[in-house]
Image 1 (cartoon, rainbow, N blue to C red):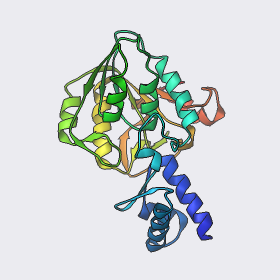
Image 2: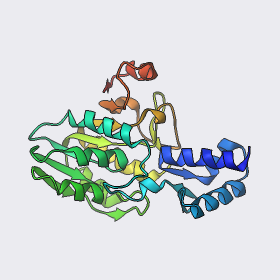
Image 3: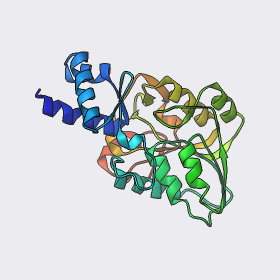
Length: 249
């Protein structure tokens, strides 16, 4: 595999999943860890991604602003957020986790919608503060520098003390048989607590993440009440998920 082709594939992986591990990419492309480490160093220097310990993260994942033009598949994520917004009504108590698609949902919430919103994301919280009808409650703890989301035991304890109508979460990987998975164990533990704290959990995921898996499981697919993608719910790519006890939007 030529270096240029490998670089293109690495950028594709990091944009899709937000973060990658050197060891995983080396195994997937059947090259040495040192080769991928050099690739990531070069791509970081070219400002194509951001190098972090053990891997890399997407540039769009490190700069949540309304004017960020590096968010991967942003049009699809906006479409997903629009569908998610249709679930909400005045009086709801909700939780919005973090990540680019959740941020798109926060941006779309209208001023007139009177809701209470918990969030583990300071950037989501700041966006919600601009909404006149939203009461915003930030669930704080140690902040991950990479995801810009609260993590750790104190966050989990706070989450287990609440019960929201809807929680909106993203995922790095989703599969019918393996459920929702990540390679970041801290993120998984927080998301597990979110699922337990929710009457209904809504997964926001672009379709490119379907049928993929990683090391650590957040939950089985049937723990999700609703899965929202940019696709029409009748799309054949969702056939396997349609046979599960989840709602597709």
